[in-house]
Length: 455
Ligand code: ASP
Image (cartoon, rainbow, N blue to C red; front, top):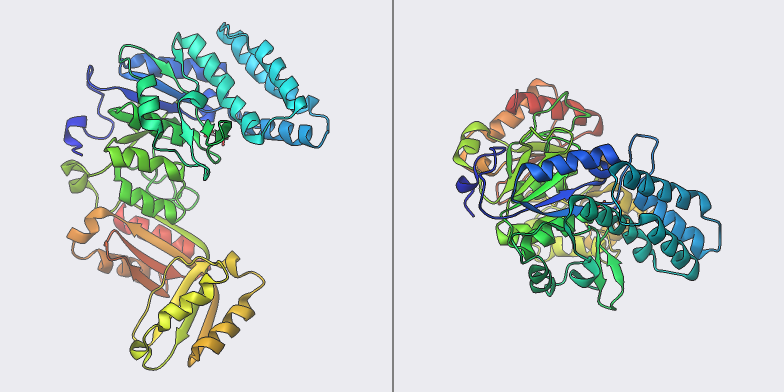
């Protein structure tokens, strides 16, 4: 996919060609004033034709998301407990928005039928899906758009993933380029014909699914931040937003703890070569971050790295044995110890006579000694070393492979900050350099790296 014809990150969209899917998150639809912002955004560009809403989210810190209230009502109903209070909060929110907007999808009557359904017994997925369903009805009515029922057009597999049968089905449903559509997020129809949701945060997935089915030009994901940041703002003061980042870089950053989109939201658009633009409903003038297959020449020229992410929640088991390299299957057997306990590992750096397994520390909770004993028993190593806490930091960037001196810059920055590197791992893709440091060095290391690469 070429990015050049789509303009650089944030460039004003060119009128006239290809439709955009616009997914609006819960905070973008939390109250009537947010709906007004959404409308202004949708109407500012004629290509914004397919709108995917989440359920209303929190209005402020003390508030509860509609989806959480729905799960609560369902749980109470299922054990025969009273759910008057959370249900009233749902009714109040939806009718309040309806009233303020002057929309008329008869939300109160629909909610009353739903209340009766809750009493007679519905699935948790069905109950949770009503947040997006009612929000979609409101939005479609108010925008004068066509409402698309996801249970009739989005197929979800037994594992909760999108079924390929969705592409022609939803594609046909969204076929008219002259219409504006509203497709509620988060749910569709399961293999048993009943309403089924994606996992939490799944409206991102619906947005991607709609973009692919409609062969959209762009998937705009409107949220409450101006794009993705190059580092964790809890650690680095006011980190720079990314202008452009590739799908591959995003995968690496997300895997190392940077929270981005729903995990399953990337594949449908990535495969179809549709870029994603993360935008801020509260700052629509900000270009946000574009997620693309290949970086534009300008982006390549302007930044060496995409970002820095990490987690301080790892543990490490290191096994040493003289002449390990000559023993066929040694690492296989070591990983087998973790495999048969169902423990996933994250990294496996090795040297000639040692191999380490880095994994999320909580997987070993309550079974460290057992695991180490089994390793001693079945692998007869010279030594087994266990480090209960280690932080892993990934410096991620597609361009690193073409840029000499990145590793030197990483280690110089860490050395200058007096930080001892416990572990180094560079994937063969050369998309990242991962360093392991003591947990107490985690934040200072991220700051030192950010200073060195971004300034
Ligand atoms: N409303 C759903 C949730 O809270 C889905 C979403 O917002 O994406 O998980």
